[in-house]
Length: 82
Image 1 (tube, rainbow, N blue to C red):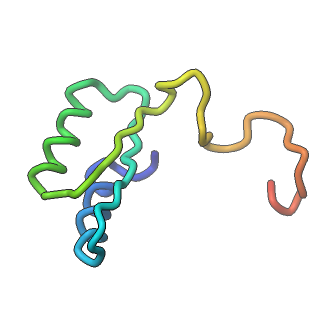
Image 2: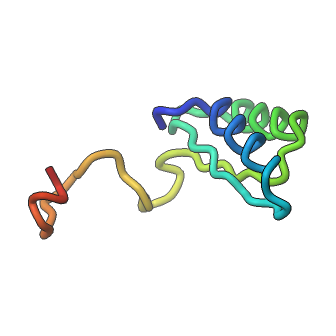
């Protein structure tokens, strides 16, 4: 979420210049993103000829796959969690 949607898209457009396959890039958006914001991302991707993108709006599902930081006690090596 620290990277703007425009930079996510720039990475995708540059990366796809060097691969033959269509590789999708996830563009992460804050939970405050509107339908218009998502539409702008897709339109910009189309204008820049991106082969494939995926848009994920933070907290749009009941559970998160990735979370920023650690929200609960973790049973793990302290070296890994500090």
